[in-house]
Length: 310
Ligand code: ADP
Image (cartoon, rainbow, N blue to C red; front, side, top):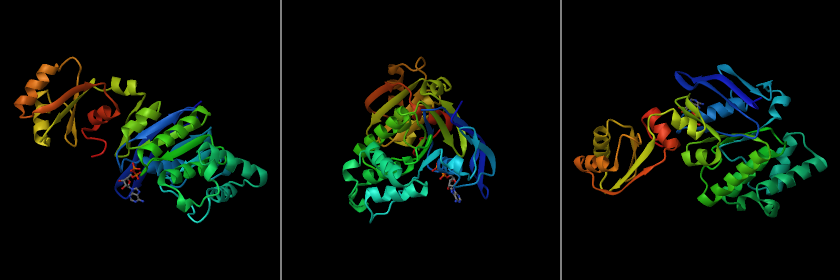
């Protein structure tokens, strides 16, 4: 039985449909990705599950318990908000003691959980240091520790790597993976396809409040036409020349990432020589041309016609 069942969620702000019929489910021990650009509806979805927002309609069940403000429902979930909420003038340990009391933990049980969670996020040796001396990555990790104190079944992680450097990001990945190995289920939102691809067994692609597709990478790729990611680097590459090349290759979806163009191609239709000829005709002088396996960005591009970070 799934740990989390989300069925046909809707939430509008005036005329804006922030969440427009979202459904998915998460199995025990699964890291499930919600991947979409800024404004896609990820936070709204998470905030509804966390009971911070009330949906216009739709249903959420967590371990079979219907979404409600009841303690039974809330105890099952750990919420890691996008905004870090820590008291800078307190130590890491003091911050967690405060959060733990909100969950009715006290005495030895509270001290034990604080020590365990500090250890789980690699901050045991900094327990007595003031949070204001922490790096951005350490604050993110402490934020995660706070949501773990009451041993929730499901973790809601809203862009947990926002604003951290690559090393701190890698550390957060390790923590997330260890949590899942320990049997926790995780709903992980991100607009970085690399994160979803690295961490998540299954991913739902969300845009304008709707889930466009969901599944494993292989399932998502099987559902689109493109079978390869054609990558062209060229000096002076422009949107116009890239569009011309895409048109010459049969009107394939394309996107630009700086001086690099990505085009969705079918592996059988486009031979490298055809690509070189078409590029030449479009006035592109490639410095490199390479053909890669499709990734989640390829899927997003085909489903929306846009890049994830447009
Ligand atoms: P994401 O987390 O994917 O970036 P959000 O769920 O935060 O997306 O937002 C979805 C859409 O709803 C966006 O267009 C956003 O501007 C809008 N939105 C979010 N919160 C509010 C609000 N309180 N009032 C009005 N519009 C909102």
